Image (cartoon, one colour):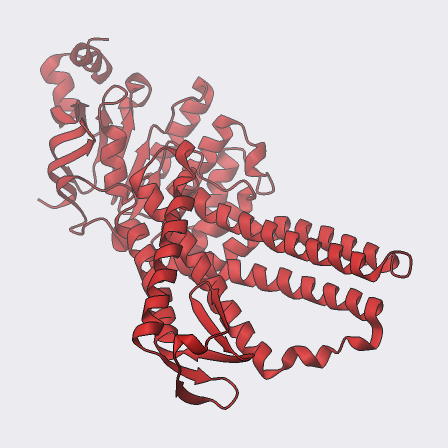
Length: 260
Length: 232
């Protein structure tokens, strides 16, 4: 898997580099406009640029996976003496590395502009708070799950229809799978209403009527009750099983079922 | 007798169309076999199943006594009829790629073949002409010490001078302990390479045997025999 990861990174660094250069030029350009333009305008455009960079990188990375199944480079990748799991693992890791790089640089540029625009109201230390750590972990789980769901959907789509002109089918499969997973999660927390209270790290039982906010991030599900974050234990287990299942399922289909 | 490839009652269907129809084929170790047939006869389908990138609908295929999978991919050196190298690569990247993934890849042999083919390591794969791309693909494939070389239309679409060069490369660099399966419909240009030939049409083997014995028995070249069988 490491060897394939090396070539995945080597083959994609130029496009990611271009995205980063554009993002840095836009963010630093905005930095010079602080004092000239309104702070909210500066931060609005900065956020938009960071979001745009992340979205562009995400779409490009998905396209790299889709191309393996629909373009001629698949004849190279799928005749290598490696398992389907290695292929999925290399694609997933390279995507995570690039999303992390773009996200970190985008986040730092955003903070830099915020610090100059709003001055002492922005404290860098606050991003390492306990609750933000949980949000970060659930964010990583969400990105991994969404990527794996997309890989799985593209693979199923390729097995169903070989014509590359009907390439959008994977998106319908992806939406349907998301709806099914979200529905199952809601049912699961009704059946097994035991939570980890992230303030005290104790297991508590809560009814749905107490919940003030539900946040489904990919497969992770967080409940907020009066501003305090609770993680449903059954859903944490389900998220892990789902990730492993999607990884192994996609690897199996790529190795044993794909027809080029 | 030991075989590098054995296909038994192999079938492949695409909806109602049968690409392979109860195909039976055995290739002995150490032989260069020409698989001959017109377009759409099932040659590429069989090759893709052997290479592990297409599944049969029914029947069995064994490569070196293994079903297609990670092991068989490590002993097969496959030349597809596609331009399969990623656009970002240079010739040197492609050499490094094969060297990293295939334990039987011989880097020095690859450099010798590059010189023979008049290709430079710093060339970008996107800057290569069709003939040069085919030469690069062949360099990569023949630089492995594989048990089975599978070449799908290795000289299709290249000019006669490049054709001769490619055929010379196949003959000079082919490891005689290995076996080779070559598909083509350009029979006259390539028949000197074959030990055995298999004629395939509508997904079935319609004639097979030792190339020299067939020439003597039918008093025809393989190319003439091909034209007679397929009515060209």
